[in-house]
Amino acid sequence: MYWMEFLTVALVHLLAVASPGPDFAVVVRESVTQGHRIGSWTALGVGCGIFLHVAYSLLGIGLIVSQSIVLFNLFKWLAAAYLLYLGWRALRARPQAPTDVTAAGGTVRSAGSAFAMGFVTNGLNPKATLFFLSLFTVVINHDTPLLVQAGYGAYLAIATICWFLLVAWLFSRARVRAGFARMGHWFDRATGAVLIALGARLALSEIG
Image (cartoon, rainbow, N blue to C red; front, top):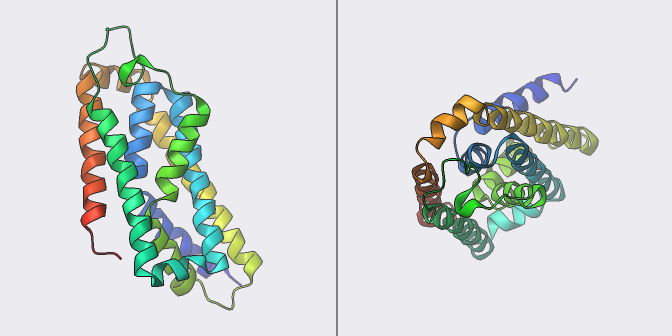
């Protein structure tokens, strides 16, 4: 009965998750600089951030936030500040020894911190707030049972995790990492510039 609605949700989500953004930039950077394990934990964090968006969409909190210019702009500025922080840290990357394949500064990130980074990056994305609010108010019929809507949400989170696990796997391959390693700290600086650009674009956007 709800298959057509589910397929619509899945298609819209596929188009959204495949488009490059902060989540993609963070997962790629962690996978290249830290390896498959840490890249995968970052991907899991991003995917679990979807549960947060789904939860407040089902509870109606997302609608309240979107209708309050003050709250939404506060949320937007927090997200922009976090992206600028990540970008600034990456820009400060220094040249490393040839045998050092860890992140800037030679530090190895823990699984917990990688998961938290992915979760916060996705959870603080106000454009994701708008996406899920639109999804649960426009695409999904308000007569659809809450349990079915929760099932859609579970699919969205699992699909996001699978996509970014694939991204982590691809960018943590030995040949890929070796190619980026030849760029040395310039790769970190390049991804830092991308994150700062995303943060600045978000801060200056008129989505509030």
